[in-house]
Image (cartoon, rainbow, N blue to C red; front, side):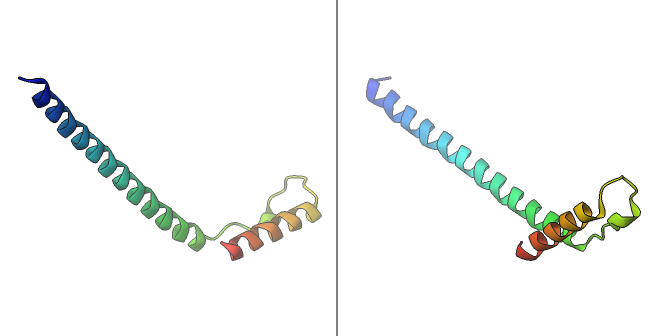
Length: 77
């Protein structure tokens, strides 16, 4: 086997390896984005229990501020 044959074989293996890694990463990106869509719609459809029912000793003003911030965040996203 000559040096040119070995260089040609190494180039083929390199391109094949890079292609396989690229396809694997592409599949991972697609799967993660689909999971993101599924969980985003699932989280929007779930109802949260009212915070006022929780007796935690937190001031009502703090609870109101956090609730308002969460509401604004959900509206913008």
